[in-house]
Length: 361
Image (cartoon, rainbow, N blue to C red; front, side):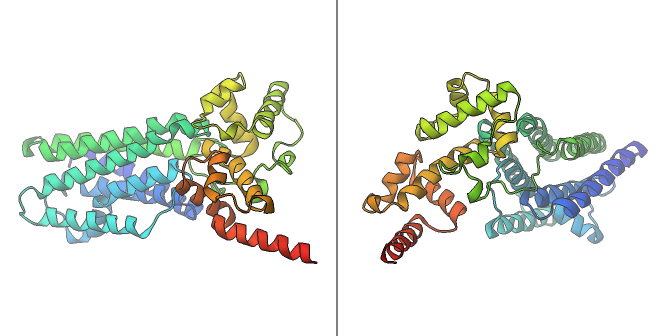
């Protein structure tokens, strides 16, 4: 291994390990922080096991690093999902997927099974594709402006670099391996510096990794009886105060959240403002990081009022949900349970029973 390669790989390894440890210390309790840390440590492991002096003859002492590097494409998917999907929660099948990829990767490395290396590379490319999908799928709904700008710049760049590396390792001849290893090290250092800059230099409000709950507590979700708690009295500059008043009128009086396919652009057009201004207002003033979560706050409160109303006892829950703006039963049930801790049926029974007891007293 050349001195230049050793230097760039050593620098990348140090920065990645430092970043991973800091993330474990400060943000390990949230999925985004945990998977960012694991991803950083996985890339750090890759900087060692992909070095020219290791390639082709991995030592048993490097087995932990090798395992972390092989499983890192799955960690990349989870990292992208956790950072850019505030409602993402890891489950046991994610762990099974990681174990399966690691097991097959070790098998392909130490066996002579024809095509195993190609299959392993294809798995890595598939994981990259899934990660990029997570980046791009929810961009239009993201209310954190800095995070929107960084979506493609960070994760797509990492995904493209990983894809080029995987393809290069499969196709490049052994004679060109030292040059590929050096280029790999330089790329790793560049990606590492970008990764560190993005994670540790964005502002608190625009942080990629939020240490606060993604969904405001039930008491903080706008209700017609308590909207003033969320919107408050206008303390913003004149333009923001007017925009807040107009937004309040649309949501409370006109109930635009009921409209099918309502987008941030559509709502901005109704308010005669820019998407950027509306995103900033909803994110920084009301504390929402996702546009659908903001809309669902109003939808859920309309549903909650209807389910607690004895006069609507015979109205089907699905009808109430669709009237409030939900498009299907599945997302409605998940959002309702996440907000109340109960299913809609359980909530209705409890509320109607409470009304009967209160009437009997």
